[in-house]
Structures are given as C-alpha cells and as structure tokens.
Image (cartoon, rainbow, N blue to C red; front, side, top):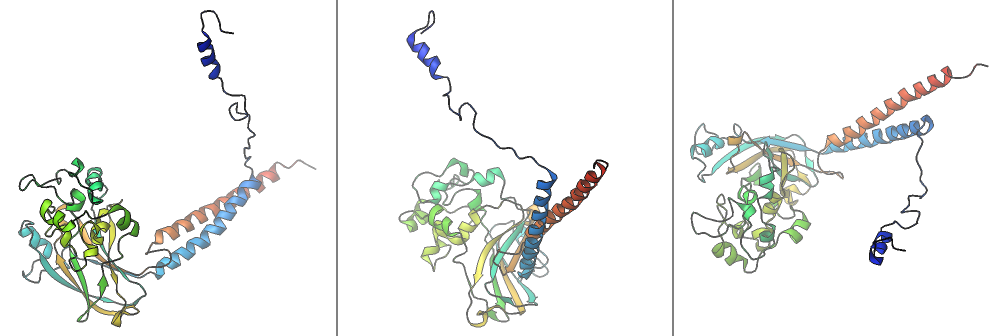
Length: 352
C-alpha cells in the first residue's frame, strides 16, 4: 500500500528500483578463488620456462637466417655527380630546398646471395610521424574519393590560399611530406628488376583509399597538388592507371604513419626473372639515388635496406631474446622457490 502522502505511481516507481531476487543480481553466484601454494605455483614457472626458452631459441635462429644489408645515404655516402666535393644533402641546402634534385651513386657489395623473395625498404631515423598534429593532418573522406571541401584538420595544407584557392588533393601534412627519393639498383651494368605493386596492405587499397569519379579532371583541374609535390597525384605512376591517384601504393604506404621515430617502409619488391630468378646473387652493386627528400635540417637520417624474410617476417631478434629472457627468469624463480620450499618444510617438520 502507498504511504501517507505517496501516490500509487510513486509507490510503483520505488518498488521497481529493487533488484530482482535472482542469484546474479543478488550476487549469490558460485565463485572460485584459486589458492596459490608451492605445489600449484612451482609447476607453472617450470612449464613456462621449459616452453619459452626453446621457442625463443627457434625465433632467434629464424631471425638470424634473415639477411639484411643497410646503406645510410644521408650525407657522406651520397656525393653529387654534378657538383664536385659536394654531398647531395649540401646541394639541396645550398639551393634552399627550392625543388632542385641531386643524383648520387653508391657502390657496395653483397657477400652472400639473398635467395628467395627480396624486399627493398627506405628507412628514416629521428622522424616523428607519430606527432599528434601530424597524425590528424589528413582527410579520410577525401581519400575515399568523396566530394566536398577538404577537412580543416589539413591546415595549413588544406587549400592553396595564396594562389588559386583550390583545395589540395591530397590535403594535410602527411601527404605533403610524402617521401620522394627515387632509388634504383644496378648489378654490374644490369638494372635490377623491381615492382611497385603489392607493397601496400590490400585492405588499405581496397577499403581506405579510392579515387573520385573523373579522377583525371579532379586532380588536374578542380584541385591543386600539395605544395611540396612536383607532380599531381594522377601522375605518380602514369604507365599504370590502376596505381595512380589516391590508390598509388607508394602513397598508401606513406600514409600509414609509423609509431616510432625510427622506422622503415616497403619501397619495392624484387621481380624474380632472368639473372634474379633465385634472388639477388652476391657481387658488386650500385645504388643510384635521385636525392629529393631533405632530412638534415632536423638531424634525420635516410637508409636503403635490402632484406629477405622468413615465416615470422623480417629480421627481429628482439622477440626471440624476449622469450628466452622470460624463460630464464621463470626457471630461476622456480629453482629459488623450490629450494626455499624444501628448506622451509625441513625446518618446520615436527620432531619424531
């Protein structure tokens, strides 16, 4: 019955707030709490140690079988072929980064054959792609080919405010800073055949990046190219229209920002034909660099990396050594606690 001064509606509302008389709502469900004893904890440490150490050894051995060759071509290794006693980094700096290019050739040798599939990467050091404002400086709707003005997050690379007033395509700091060095490889006097297809994640190309309708007119007439680009997005790979615009795989790879300031991104894959049917043979090679991308102003470094892979991916000894370290710690813990347990039991054994 409702109390004094209480309506029937108030009474029903108060009544409805009471939890139902069920095991779940009244917290009467059966519960189990493990009791940790030496007999239960010690086998766990032993099993983890005996499992992790062999796994770590396998991972380290697998990683060591992956072959890598790194070339730092930031400055001293990359001497200009046109300006005497001048590095390409100095040549770009002397030109005040006004779009001048520089070419250099770096000779090196592979002591071992890189058998199987071979991948070529460019690496950047001290380059913070993970900066909050940098990561946000993009327009995902624009990259999906949707119509509309570029997002304000792209500022100051949203539109050409000092010229035509058109939106940049693509807009934003990430796109504007796209890596644009050209790297090619010679084996003696023979060009090493590579491909720029299949280097991006298939999900990225199929889901996250799509060209707008009438893409040629979109990129050449209704929008401007980013200020640091020499070509429009529709000219990135002219011989292959399926690899142009927002679906250009070099562009897609760059737009997937790195989490750490030292990173590498896939640049090319070896085409296994003729001389390179089985991979890269050992011998003398020449790296030909068209040097466009300045990094010395922020103490950055650039690398060219040649690598094979294994079933676990590229070279990564850290993972294997981590397994080994955890396994060793567990084994040491097992031995120490086992000795303490046995010693404690002997000391506390009742007299006969």
